[in-house]
Image (cartoon, rainbow, N blue to C red; front, side, top):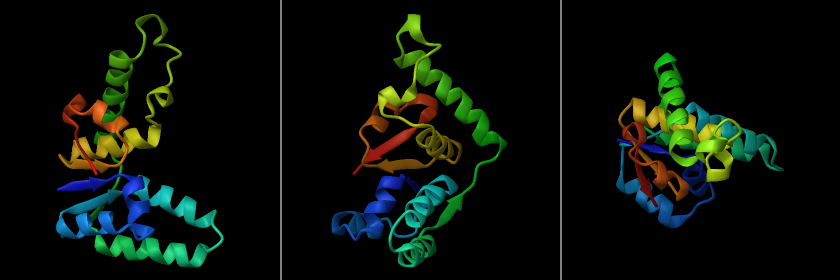
Length: 144
């Protein structure tokens, strides 16, 4: 089973043929998270074509196997994951003020990664920064 990153979802919505082909090859093994849905809807509501973009998101939701939610277990994983990333990648003398963004990783990315870890899903992304996180909390990442 696979969990899509938001950038992959955007490529699907924009009709990227390579991404669509790979998505179709995975058939009913692909899921997304509520974080993805929120990010996609934010983009849709900020666009000129709100109605068309919302419809495209609804169409995508109908094509994925599941939309994973955040629960208490996800929160525990998120906390451990974030702490381990900071421990591993920040300068030892500057851990307090260290910002994950300096690694190219944002909080929403960590929530999506936490859902992937929780449900033992392979996270599919175009973001090579995710690849550096592979193995932390048993995170598995595939870069398209």
